[in-house]
Amino acid sequence: MSRPLSSIEREYLATNEPAEAVIDALVHADGWMLDVDGCLVRTTKAGGAGGAAIEGAAQLLAWLRRHQRRFVICTNASQHPVSHYAGHLRDCGLDIADHELMTAATATADFVARHHAGARVLVLGDRGLSEAMRDAGLQLASSTDRNADVVAVGAADQYSSSTINAACLAVADRGASLYTSVGSPWFHGGVDRSVAVSSAMANAVAWVTGAIPQVCGKPSPALGEVLRERLGGSSSQLVVVGDAAGAEMKLAHQIDALGVLVLSGATMAKDLPGLPLDQRPHWVGRDVGQLLQQMRAVLP
Image (tube, rainbow, N blue to C red):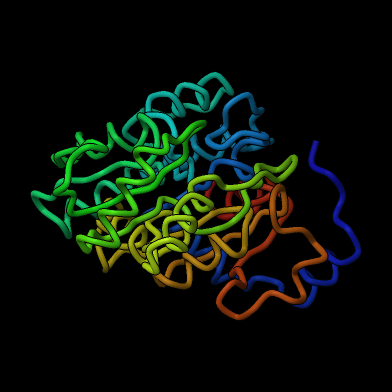
């Protein structure tokens, strides 16, 4: 069951009560992006692995399908292929097809393919990123190649010293563009936080080379570009749902979408009063179950 509202949440909701027009806009929005960890699933591992669906998550997806709303499930996970994460979500009881899931790896690959057509990409990461690059039509460079045009960093359990060296040389000596799947230092799936290893590794390369990595996961303009393309273009009214004000709500402001903040993960009730303007939601609630309850009151 959903937990009771805290006094801080009650105060915030009382003074920031969403107008009927906001709920109506959510109900009739064209496209939706929903975060995974801490939003649809409570877990300690990126991408929903080993987690449990949050109350109302499966029903929200069913509501979106019933009313023919376009949606993308989006995670900043990048270590494994899409099928791996989608399988975990299905194990949690969420009706999600592989093609409905966007990872930070696939977003990075789509963005790189769009802006570096024909490039040779050196991947500093695992299968999730390398397979996404291949699927996007890009060539992969090995650690012994000397002609990488792009270095892309994703999550992995292990990084070889030879690949790290090759990545740094490509950026420092040959001017290769540096991209990372994640820019935030921490991951939070609604249980405990852990370090975002792709961000840590990208910043290690940046420290050595002096380059500034371009982020392609949430909350980046790069992901926003890819997301809008998948959800209908610039004319569509979009909704971004997530548990991290610094990620999903910031992304919502960047792409002129409605931001829905659920307090089931990274952002807590005590954080609400201090949120900067570019991270403030249009609607805030306990979880996606409460969101669905309010929308069903308008459109069952």
